[in-house]
Length: 319
Image (cartoon, rainbow, N blue to C red; front, side):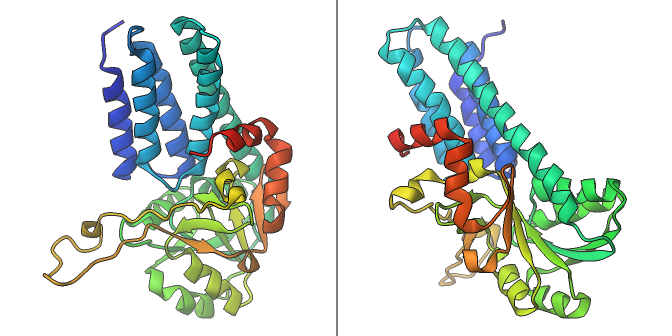
């Protein structure tokens, strides 16, 4: 086995996540846990415990608004702590971390498959769908609907300042779906002009009360949908639920580097760059989850029922 710096493996992935070289909550989660598995292979036994804790902290700090990743890390950390308390050997701990990481990756992949299986049926034939930013789950739902013979067009907003909406437009167009690409501020114009049948977005986080947190601009789409009587659905795995919100805490809204918006802003111009915003339950017609299409008020109950072990762990590890 070629020798590698185990923390450099984690540092590299953390930086890619932080710089949006790795995008999307599901992909971030999978890559973070794969990095932990890789870390385990190369971490030396003599200071494994210290290095492991550093690795966990580095990943957690890479994107604060990503409960799917945090729930996965808690899942792995719980396994580690249980074995460490029993004075298990480092080899036993390493094997358990690898198994637990893969188990969570399989869990989230299976959840997405179920969401796609449920979600494509909700896409109206000969309809128009509005979406915002880039959600791999939303894209997969739309492509699946296309492959099942449905014909529809998509209105995709570009998503300033990092233009993730262009990823959505590109992927859909490549799959033969007709796409109208608009600037974020043109949502009301597009709704008035095209009279969409459905609005569909993903989510980076879900709170215990059914508030969703998604890329800034999502609330504008929600308000537009409400004004023009367009049903708004959110496609997201329940693993994106932030259990801390059930205990009075808030999911942090990441503020990103102002230079993403305006690299050479004039002196005395303060550029603000919030990455996410909330969409309240009253704007959401349903959340398409692996549990089924449920109202926002049911997300915590469904999470507890489907992921009992992670719920129990989350009560112990509020990180």
